[in-house]
Length: 306
Image (tube, one colour):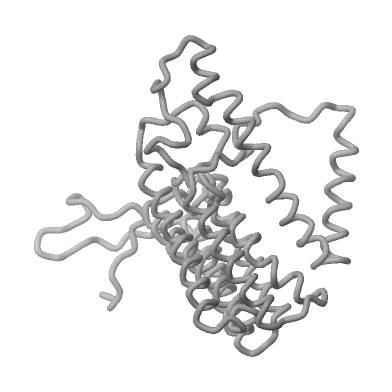
């Protein structure tokens, strides 16, 4: 029995999928192919719900929903690879979800909470951040299809990845919930900070990604590693806003050290010291970029991880 819905094909239809004069064949899709896309849809729902809660002045729940959306948007790609369910459809859908969850939702939550104190300037800051997140994701999508990648891109992002940008830009909200006064002065300060984070998203600052860490954990460090993770999660659950504030500040503080490490190992002076021409390969000022994300993170398809 024909249905009013077009057939779903995770990687698109080709000529072999069509009968003569009867359109595409309907074939069964394994359920495992749908799981990553369902996670992506849940992430979009969480991000949109966060926007609604912000307009209802339920700021803490709004931030929680945005962070949940970021978490779901970060695991869909890993689930896709685990289930061998990567698809072109999932890649496109995940990119759209990234713009909502890492760009639009944080910007609107921030505007409702504090940027509106700066009136038009605050709204401009929210727009700048949302557009910067979109540009960051578009740049990654283009570069992820390139086959020419430098060695250092296995270890560093170019610019702050979008998921980290969403975590960082909400810092004024964390501080406000902890008691920072919300007035015109803090509104303008938060607006300037929001545009600064947007700049970091589209900048060429090399940011350590951790993707190139291939070694395991030493046997004698397994237990301490687990305990540190437990302590962090416990702090996050018990002192949520304080822990998120310290996490955002620590990430910002780590950026100069990551850039310095990149310059020491892959910068022009390092290439000259190794006997390579100064224009060999690509550096952080070249035209080659990547996404964190991740994303910046894995997509619910074959897209690389940010």
